[in-house]
Image (cartoon, rainbow, N blue to C red):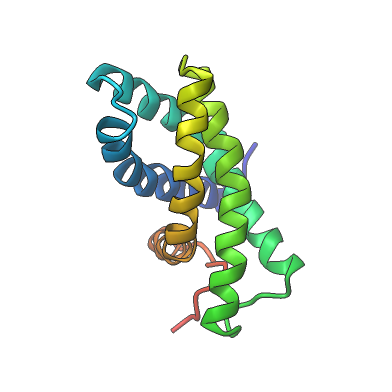
Length: 149
């Protein structure tokens, strides 16, 4: 059985990833990829399902990635930004491509969507990390890179 702490961490990481990226990706999927509203809903519902595993896995990935690059709460914002942005890019390209594929997107759509994921990761890597640590705080879970106050 899952411990209470593990369950809180799992739910915090699931909630942060699902809410942050739904808001970020829906306009792109509609306006740029020209997916029909039902297809956007399928992708977002698929993402919510994928995030049952992917969200908490990314939370663990963030912890290990930060440790690998010796990045901690008191590291400079520049170092945190670089480490989180590269980590976000590596993780997001793989999961988003798989999600689009599983939702029935064509190879052309996947290839068209991948540069957006890279761009989105460049813009959202550190902001997502800040948001994720904030959501973790709401659930009483230790943050990855946020200075405790």
